[in-house]
Amino acid sequence: MRASRPKPDKLLDHLRKGDEVVVWKLDRLGRNTRNLLALIDDLEQRGVHFRSVTEGISTTGPMGRAMLTVMSAFAQLERDQLAERTRAGMAAAAEHGRRAGRREVTAEHVKVKRAQELKAQGLAPADIGKIIGASRATVYRYLSLGVDDMS
Image (cartoon, rainbow, N blue to C red; front, side, top):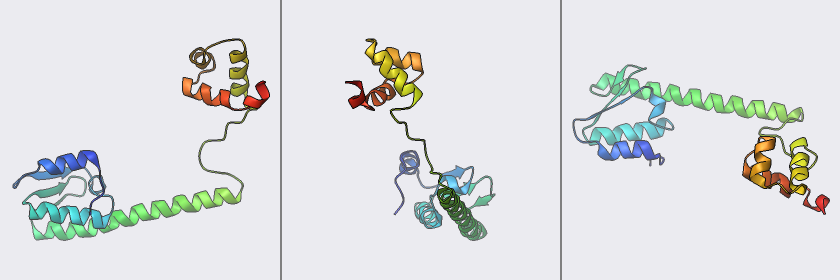
């Protein structure tokens, strides 16, 4: 039921009855409310306590468990609203002709042209990368752009 996360999974594998899991914030342990509550249930069944420092919640008593449920619901609401605002912002940007992500590099890009010129002079991709300030892999990508133009 819980999402695979290597470090938290490793922690959970080492827990024993009587241990206490302490996190800085609720959202550090679970991806969403359902995931977090299922995880807390699993901990309780194993005799492991939970405490969140920022929210001041501990599952050692019934009130802490109730507060955990309420706080995790609010944390989920906050994440959902953030995702909704992000999607709305991206949609608004798209309406104005802007796209999310890095700009596409074309064969007309200055660094691409420079890389192609240096390659024509016989320089190795690693050396070209040092000159234009790009990784060797990026140089190879640049050199593959406009390959037809170079013949």
